Length: 180
Image (cartoon, rainbow, N blue to C red):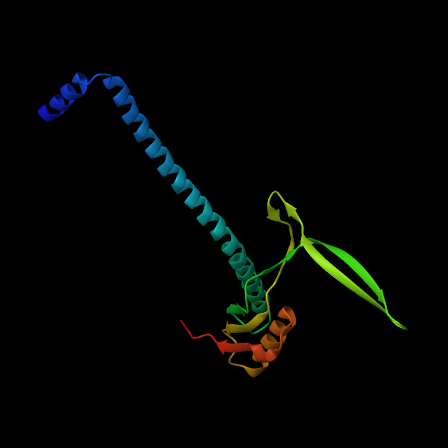
């Protein structure tokens, strides 16, 4: 405590100690402000990135859940779990304008027309306008069902999944759920 009093006496003895004290306080306030600002920016960036991935995950999980619910309604299938794997993530369809430019050249006895099309994406508020998100290609589906030990039920599940997802039956694997 005495050391603090000594430091305070030294600061008081310096001319214009109020100015030095204000400068120190301003420096501390600015330091705190910028550190909080940077952390907010990093949190915002992380939340935007997680929103993009969570939208993709939500869409795929929603499809798996809907397919599970439908399959469970088929007579004899029982409890169902579904896993769908994709070739990539969703593909955005970007709004764009197409400009065409035609050039005609004439030779001795022939005429050649060349058409050049250029596509320019539409931008609003420095963001590209996305019309829709295309679902990626489905690589495979795994279905685990309680009633899958019967061949007849397996065939029903295979047909239903193939029809619902529009994929070939070779991409679908069906397994019997083990007893818990």
